[in-house]
Every structure is written in structure tokens, then in C-alpha cells.
Length: 268
Image (cartoon, rainbow, N blue to C red; front, top):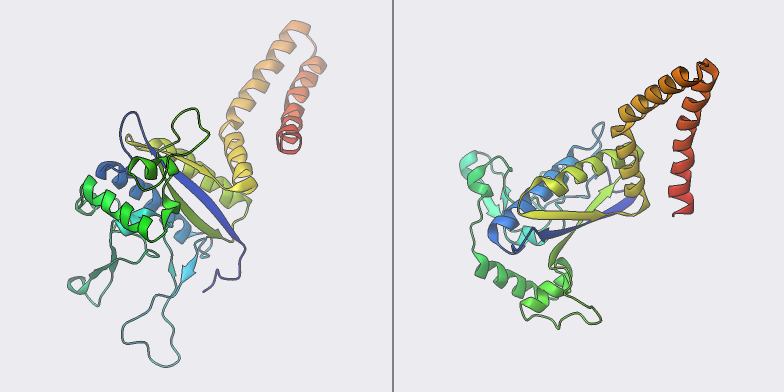
């Protein structure tokens, strides 16, 4: 696969319910699935024909002719969602498609397909899946508080109040550059606030942190230009001196690289 030799990075997602809801409610899980589908699709599209996802070769029933290889596919986000929604395995025609539960494939069809986006299970069935995964020591998808609420683990110790009830997922990426991290940071910021039933937190090391910072600076660029124009205009009118206006504008512009260095180097 074309991306197997590229450096690997991981982005962690933490999904929680808003207000007094539960992250295990089917409608909340459906929104978690839509977030992760969009991230999987972004990683699969990549840049300049090079996907950013972790690729693998799915087995093909009956094999392939000699000298041919099964095309690589993108793995989905490593998430409990893949155990709840089946993936669609394409056949020779639309009638020959089949459903498979393979945790490496993107679960379900597309977010625009409303029938397939609707949960096909209830809260009790979801808890049954969580219990099944816990018996197989696949508890990395769940916070300790969530498992404790279901009686599958002792409550977290040393906390003054309840821990976060959340689902955890991992997105594996390859071949990312600074521009890709900036695009991903913008996408994550939008997805984290887009859905009414869930809130998504994310983290991925310094590369994603720099991407967030650059995305914020690019969004605020017009505000910076407007501030420079207002400060320069005010100084020109107040001092009636073009040099003073230019000096004030230059001081404002130079403060941004200095602040960036303080945040990234001194602040770590």
C-alpha cells in the first residue's frame, strides 16, 4: 500500500453527551458515527492523490488471478461504532452487496443516507455490546466512569467528583504535513461543535497543536489587517506624523511572531 512507508501519527477523540444525555443513547451514537465517518472520508481523500489514512488489503473470497493484488482500502477510525454498524461489502451489482462487521472498514454507508444513519438498536443492546467488549478486554473505547456506571469496572479513585462519561476513539494518519494538520484542525474544530447531542474533544500532540494555532491565525488574518489599519489611522490623526503611524503599525505586526514564539517555545 502506498502509505505504509510514511510516518504514522495518531489523533485521539473523546465523545461526551451534552447536558443530561447519555453517550450510549442510540441517537447520540449515530452522531458519533457521523463525526467519525467524515474524518475517515477526509483521511481517505488525502492530498494530491496520496491518502492520509492507514491502509490495508482486505481479503477477497476466491482470491485474485496470478500477478494481481487486491486494491488497498482505508481503515476507519478505531471506535466502538464499528461494532454497532456493519460495513457494506460491494458486489458485482447493487443487489449483490452484503453487510460485514469488520472493525477496519468504515461503518455503514454515507451520512446523507438517512435510513442507514438511523440506529438499528436500542440502549439495552448497546450496553450488551459494551459488556461483550469488556469481557474480551477491549475496554479502551470507554472511560472508567462509563464502565463503572454499567457495573463493569470499579469506580475511579482519588477524584473529588465523577469522572467523564465518554467514548474514546483513535484516528491513525500517515504522511501529514503542516498544511494537512491545519486543515484537520479546522475540520475537528467544526465537528466538535456541529452536533446537538454530543461534544467531541480531540488531541494529537504538537503537530495538531501547531495546526490549530495556524488555523486560528489564518481565520484572524483579516482582523489583524483591520487592527493595523485602525491603529495606523488613529496614530496618523493624533500625532499628524506618518512615521509615528508606520512605527505603531510595525510594532503591532512584530508582536505576533514574538507572541507565537512565547506560546510555542516558552509555553511548550
